Image (cartoon, rainbow, N blue to C red; front, side, top):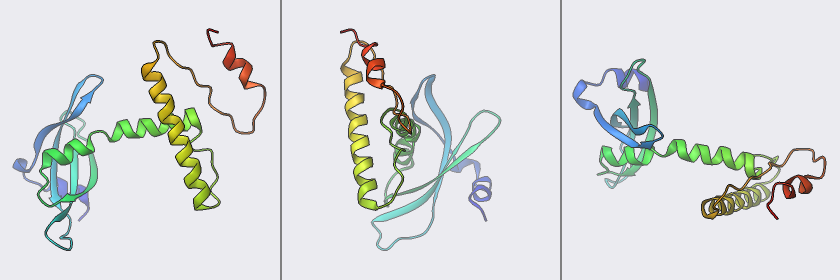
Amino acid sequence: MTVAEQAEALPANAWRRLSAGAGSKGPRVYDWACWPIRPLTGARWGSWFLVRRRITPPVECAYYVAFGPADTPLAELVAVAGPRWTIEAGFERAKGDVGLDHYEVRRWAGWYRHVTLALVAHALLAITRSRSPGTVEVIPAQKGGGGDRCSSVRSRCPN
């Protein structure tokens, strides 16, 4: 059986209505269910399929694989799965602001250095934005270079 078929076969009492956190339009409330995938070595750890189902039609499902301590409650699994969209948005912003995706992988060490530097730069920009009374505008790097971008940045600065 596929995960979707297993989710459809769940009884109505297997689903719990929980919030995945605050969204731009209020709490993001969905129906959630989970079931164990397989027993892991030792009784201390568990692995589950976690399913999120929309409440309003059209009913759509999202599927997760969760791993953690065996006694992890469903509400805690939901709390961990909830910020996934925020994390994805952060990676997208890092791609645009600091060129996270501009490295062509040749060796692991070089890729690791590039990603580390890009994410540190992204964190610095995020901190600067949060402390700045105005907005800090970043002109994304363009592949292939071209032009004097320093002058265009200076023209937007108040000094």
